[in-house]
Image (tube, rainbow, N blue to C red; front, side):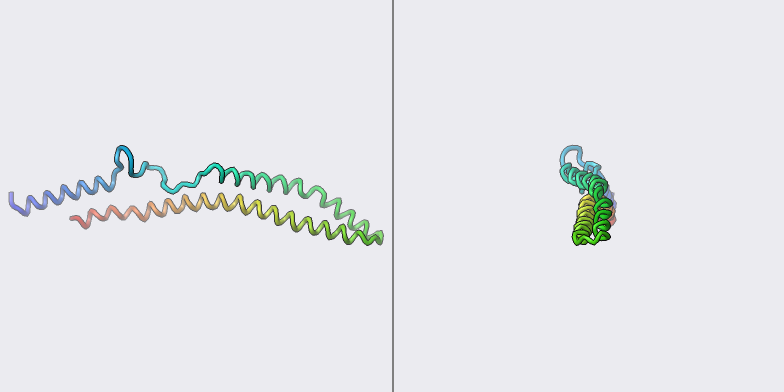
Length: 142
């Protein structure tokens, strides 16, 4: 066997070994386990999101119970020439603005946590896709 043939054979064996190392996972410890590396699943964050959603649902139902009667009282007082009618209407409007702000805040917290988890999953897919070309290292070793 000539030097060139032996050298080509050794180089091919080295390429084969490096491809196996790049494309495989060690049996114990280290390396990827097949599961996503970038994972967001902390229970306390999920609990906060669920609580925010539950609070929003309850507030949207129960926070609006007094609105119709308060508005009706404000109109009746105003129509009866009572000065307090305008004040009751201000209270009604003030409550509606702040209730909407609170509902929006609860929705924002819940949605943000859902978005964060989904975005991290997309990032994991993108990162894995960016890492796939690493197997091209074997082409440079030829």
